[in-house]
Length: 93
Image (cartoon, rainbow, N blue to C red; front, side, top):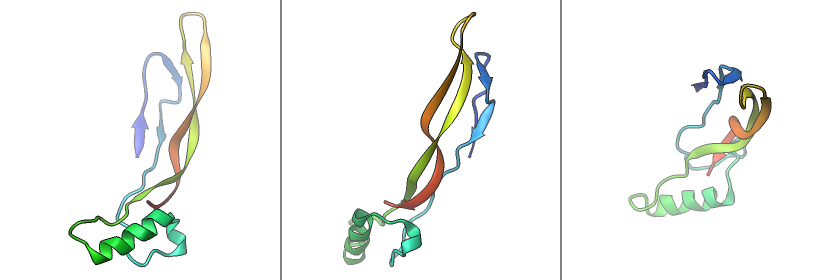
């Protein structure tokens, strides 16, 4: 997912790749799905009562920061790190 942050007051970056997680988590939840214990229980409950409880969803499990260089005012330039902006890995939640 490309995010455009081009503004007059932002020096860099013009944008960044935020990435994203998508999809349902189907039974059985394998180790490569990074499933939480809650997701495992939700999957089992969904199997017993699928019309009432949804499947777990794929969601970010690790997020990385981005650094943004911007003008605070006419005289000051700030370099700020914004936490949890880029998806690094996904899992079932």
